[in-house]
Length: 233
Image (cartoon, rainbow, N blue to C red; front, side):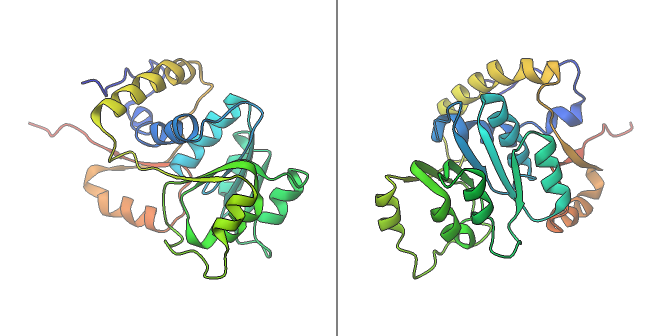
């Protein structure tokens, strides 16, 4: 009961379903783990994902400079539309690091939200600014770092830190406080339309396999929602 939130009056049940747990995850990563501050620069990987879309909106609202990566132009355009100052494909020749360093005038970023892991590690190290916080919350690109990456030396050189986080393993009291803080901040902004729970597609519950197929195709931007209807009596 302590984890329930009121549905803003302007949102449908499907839109409300797209808020947890992606928005709670993004809020936690930004403000409880990374201690994000206005004026900082942030790099959000998979910026077209559910968490990425939420994190982009939260960071822009906070007054941060947002850079995002994704693999398709549709996802990159969504990030730009939501306020990202730079949206770059990780598939570009040379990767995303040159574009991020150019956009930041060589200073790099203060925060990296990383659900990719190993395959982005070397470029993440390259774009970290002084005292950067690298927050890992997923390993879609594998758990292993390149063997020739002197990660500890690079972290020490930049006084940077690595944080890891999963929401599911948090205590009930932690989730209760997170929900309270998030609701106080975000629900009025959903009601005003400043925050938007972006839905890519909605499937009826009996088409759950089609929903999984759509998700596994990596074509979605934002959330995929299953709609549950009451059975006819």
